[in-house]
Length: 310
Length: 87
Image (cartoon, rainbow over all chains, first blue to last red; front, side, top):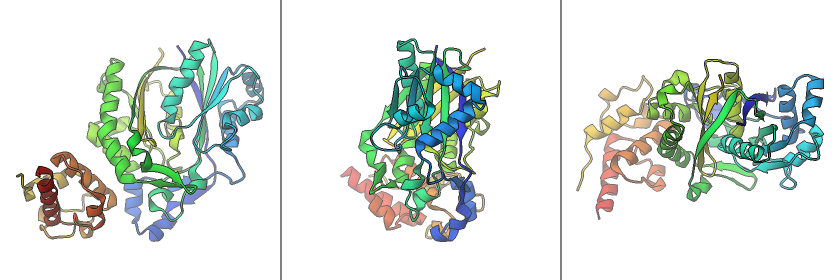
């Protein structure tokens, strides 16, 4: 079975500090820390394109030059999950193909999804690899919102950061990718939308959607995979905000020690939030059964069960 | 026709996991919840819990007019929505 072998992450060094925006948005430091949960936002250098961030994530996954060179020759397929690529045409994965100097036999494609994108893309890439007997696939996530944020919008300017990740999928994996459960409500598409090149977010609609629809989606995913809630070692939720994650923990009566939250110093990096959490769990042998759940733009939900191989 | 009680609204507020500094036991029905310390996310959760409990949808227009800023205001607005729902 195709599964997850390793993850590389690139987070820009530049930061903007949310503590400097308290007066602008008329909020307290307590609200920032306890509810938003984001103190600093990672911001990419304006000269870097998403394909550049992806390439830097690849260097994190394969830090040794010779290893990188040999790996490039054996990559069978590449997927880039982004809604803010280098250009609208061509696909960012084509540009990345050039920057990584990959084989001409390697198919590349973009997936236009946001917060659910990592889970969707795991399933899609896994299926393409299994159908074609591919051995090594790369799934990149990179959705740098910094260039499309309205700096006067309290709903978004405190929240989103930039990052890129890459996940290596192989048939010699650490985590098997099992069955997923999806949910889409396209009637709510306008709750998170880019208009006039700026992101506009209806927090209330998204909150209501997540609270109503994510718990049953997760429960369906667990049932589909014949696993109980108590058997899950970690719930890797999309890191939307501290309040959103805590609200889900409360609603589902989960043990909060099983629900990581790690975006205080980087922000919500859209489709990169889940793999950034996952990278830390890969080296934890106690992290055997994982339930990943992405939710947001669309509006949509995608949950999947990962099982560590013995 | 169902009528909303103060006790029910206190019950919803208790579910919200509010900041420990907000003393729900000693607030009066007319006190401003915002001035007591409920923030925008607390209110968002409050609207959600009210919608779930009463099977209604609270229109954005009512929220923008800040009619839900006190227990008395919540009761008045909910009773109005429920009356329209009952027809």
